[in-house]
Length: 178
Image (cartoon, rainbow, N blue to C red; front, side, top):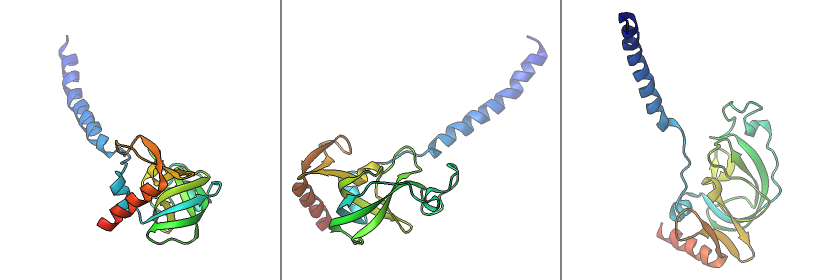
């Protein structure tokens, strides 16, 4: 190997090392969704309610963040790709209007509160002046008949359908401890 080739390798190694160090240190900057335990979800939600969601639609550009998917949100922490009218059936915690617009489909691709038509046990918060889910897909728990999709023995997943009355009692017990 010539002396010139050896010197080239010596000059490149600090640059390669610096690039590797920079890349490794930036891995922690990539977001990861955190899913709350049942008690965290109950405690952190501003409003817990049984709600009825109408068919979702695309929100106006002021909520979506415009037409550029890389543009920062115009309102709130996230840009939202869905909105739906909500009618409140029963409030378990906090205060909310009887009817309002709920936003979902956040620009955080790893986890989103996807809106769909139906009846839900909802854990809601405000992002600026927008009503949104408190914790991604855990925010809206499907209600079917007298049952709700709720935490099983392992948290947060898998969920299983359980008696709605029992889950409401569990939520009220956690709220009394606060």
